[in-house]
Length: 285
Image (tube, rainbow, N blue to C red; front, side, top):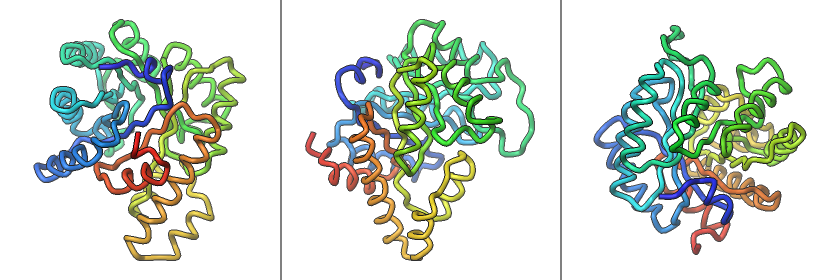
């Protein structure tokens, strides 16, 4: 295994994000995707934590499978919503036992039904403090280049992120489509005295309705030029080609700006990731 801060000190990293499958068929799809992407030798992969707070145990199942059955370094997402400190201590103990060394500590999405959840945590910073205090894990936190959708303003958002990065090792961003958002985020953190690595999350578009829904949830803007390209076609294959083109250009721009790594949202499918890495010349490394 490897700690992500150590990997970041050595090179520009390449990493992928997956979500826990919910059906036997989805498990098979994920397995085929992992097999297809093995040739890219990602430095680590992350596993999301039950979108909307659902099916949380599935994350641990996928993390354990990847840790024991693949050559990859899996990093579980862990959210504070609905958890007691005893819950978190138990999860961290399990992860330590199977050799996990990296945790992404998050606030998490509100429940889909809008109901309040019982638990000991209100903010991601509180969860982060407990993960760090355990002494066993390198820690990452979420960053929103275009500001968290529940933040009252940009300055407050950046102060909260800086407070997390004062004790975390790195940040991993929500997806965005224009390099200027990442550059501005890094500059704003530097103004607050924070120089920890900020890994950009890049999502290849594969479905028009899906990306619009995810952008609305995350606070990411769908730029007019991109919306125009997507609205000009109803061909799913053309939408995927647009997604590959846009993501590849964004990755190239990020490399030019000195990004410490590239984190691609695989969406549990290999084709777009393989195409992007081929365009960037990363498939040979």
